[in-house]
Image 1 (tube, rainbow, N blue to C red):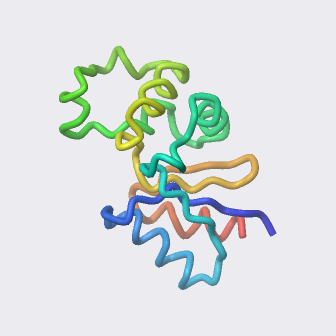
Image 2: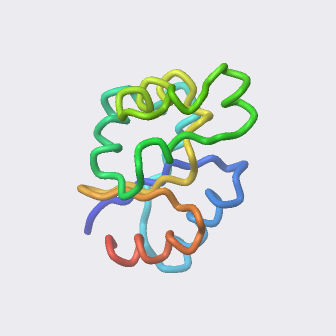
Image 3: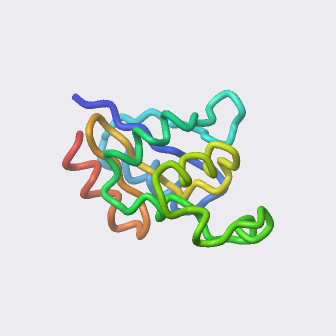
Length: 122
């Protein structure tokens, strides 16, 4: 059985939904609280994630108030390297949840993407 990791923010309803769906399906997951200092991803780790991500790399970057607060614009998050560097410096900007297993990853937005990923990779 493949290990599935959920990049999780417990304050996010979509992220909580991913954990709940995994529980309902009986799919064991590892929770990665990526905003905690000890669990923050490195640039190298993010580049590896981007390589297997079903979505465009720039989709990993949340476009919320922090995007403007940190002085970013679209030109700053176009390449995988740029995305990895921005997210390593500001992990709170990682779109969530992100579901990851060996060789595959998906952003769990909208929520209807979560169950098919978990089912396919359990």
